[in-house]
Image (cartoon, rainbow, N blue to C red; front, side, top):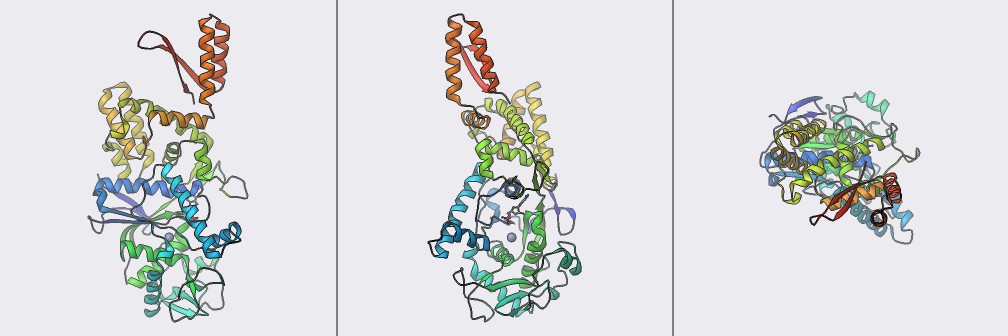
Length: 471
Ligand code: AMP
Ligand code: ZN
C-alpha cells in the first residue's frame, strides 16, 4: 500500500511522506463567517475530514494536526453586521455576526459527520503574526509601503505563478486585478490596508501611522505559520482558491521564511454545481447545508458528496440524494443488525484503506463497501459484516442508532409517524372485524405515503404490524 496524493503545484500524483512522522500537518482554508454555509462549502469540509481520518489512522490520532481557520475579518462580515445590527457599534455587530455564523457552521458540519479540526484559529487573534510576516517581507525587499497600504511586490519572486501555472501576463489578463495608482505593478497585492472609520482596525506595520487591517491572503500565511510552522505537509481548499489566494499565500510564506515551498502537497477539491447549473443566488438554486439537513439525514449528504472523486466536479441532484439514501438504508439495515454500533471499532477494511490511500479515491472505497455488503449477504456473513461496519464507522457513518436513522428517514420523507401509527391501529380494528376491504384501503393509503407494512407475530403469537419508509 502506497500513500499518494495529486499535488496541484507539480501537477502529478506523488508518494506522500510527512516531513515529520510524529507531527503530520495539514492546513485547510475555512469559512468566512457571515452567513449560512452552502452545500459547495461543505465539499472541502467533508473531503478533508476523510483525509484527516485517513492520516490519523495511518500515523496515529495524536500525531496529526489539522488546522482549519475561521476568517472573521472581511467586508462581507462588516456589511452583514451593519445590516443586521444597525443600532450597535460596528465592532459589536461584527462580533454577533461572527459568533452566530460560527455556531451555525459547527452545527451543520457536525451533522455531516465531520470531526472538529485540531485547531480552528480566528484571523482576528493572529494580527501580531500577520504584522510580523509583513515586517519580514518589507525588510527582505518583497513588500513596500504606499499610501498607507503595504503591497507585496510580485516582481521580487521569480516563482510567482507556479501554482496557477500562469505567466504574469496571463494572470493579468485573467484576473480582475485592482489597478490602483499606489501599486508599482498591477499584479502587486495588498498585505495591509487602512481601515475606514468605524471598521475594525489595528496598529499598522511598516511605520504606517494610521490604523489598518490585513488583506485576506496574509491571514492564512500567518495562521499556518503560528500553528504548523514555516513549512508543512498538506495545504487544501477548493479549486477556486488556487489563484490568487493560494498563489499569494505561497509568495508571502516562501519569501518571509526563505523556503522553497510552503506546503509539500497542495490539494484542491473540484467545484459543486446544482442540477447541472452553477450555484448562485441569482439563479435561485443556492442551497445551504441547513436547508438540506431539514430534508435529509446528514449522513445522506455525506455519502452523496463522497460518491464523486474529490478532484472532479460534482453535480448535486435530488436523484443523487435519493440514491444515496437508498444505499445507506441497505448498509444500515445490515450493519445495524450487527449489534451496538457505537461500540464497534472504527476499523476500515484493507480494500477501503487502499482506495483512500490512492489519492483519496472515495468512489472506489464506496464500490468496496458494496462488495463487502454483497459478501455479507451472500457469503460468510459475520466476517464481512464486521468489515462493512468497521469501514462505515471509519468513514464517519453509522453514528446514528436505528431509531435515529428511522426518524431521520421519516422526516426526510415527510412522513408523520403519529398519523402512520393511527392508520395502522384503524387497520388492525378493521381486520379484527373482518372488514378486509377497509384494511386493504388503509394499506394502500399508507403505500401512497411511501410507507410499507410488514405483518408478523410477536413472541406470544399475537399479530403485530411494523412499518418502514420505502424509498
Ligand atoms: P468561501 O467561504 O467562499 O471562502 O469558501 C469556503 C470554502 O468552500 C473554500 O475552500 C472554497 O473553495 C469552497 N467552495 C466554495 N464554493 C464551492 C463550490 N461551489 N464547490 C466546491 N467548493 C466550494
Ligand atoms: Zn486561506
